Length: 242
Image 1 (cartoon, rainbow, N blue to C red):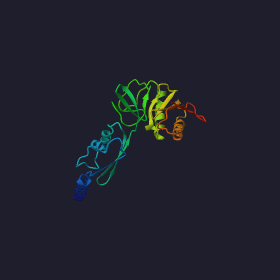
Image 2: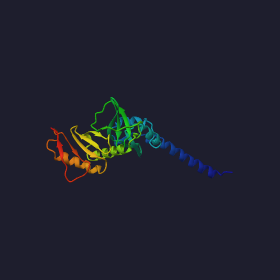
Image 3: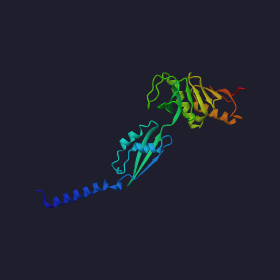
Image 4: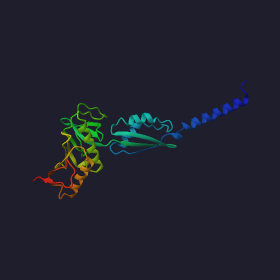
């Protein structure tokens, strides 16, 4: 038989466990403050709505896996992490996918691509100044997936140049990038200055050279012309068009 002492101990432990449980699910741990960081394209309001936090949502038992899935249904969000700040704070760290370029899908509609070639959106208009990719053929696409193309070399070149253009702060001045021929890629800056960069070999140096040329160019806001950058040399000639 169980002794009275053991029953008393069991009852005491059970009472403590019940008290602890009641404390953990009490309003003391209800989420009162949500701090969202890392958003620029996606609004804080949209992230907040996707979290689906109610007035009585418990910080300890908040289902971060389900919340992460809901937040990442927005394709502009690449990842999200949660941190708990006791007793009532939830920190949400968002990592967005950056828009890199547009590809015409049908007359009047464009695919929005990130820096890895993932399709984020299809829209009939765009306002953010980014390159329009010309000559990039694709067989099919699916939102949230990398664009499928028959010429992976051209696609890889696009990805490399887009990343370097972003890193060097030139992406918003490039209006078009023609990759009809992956060995004869042409980058159009400000809609007036064309640079034939050839293929993706030494792409970073070629972008740096374009920037140097633009910085040394007198009155770049009115000059039209072209330059061959197929190979890196000690001197280049920019041909001005009248």
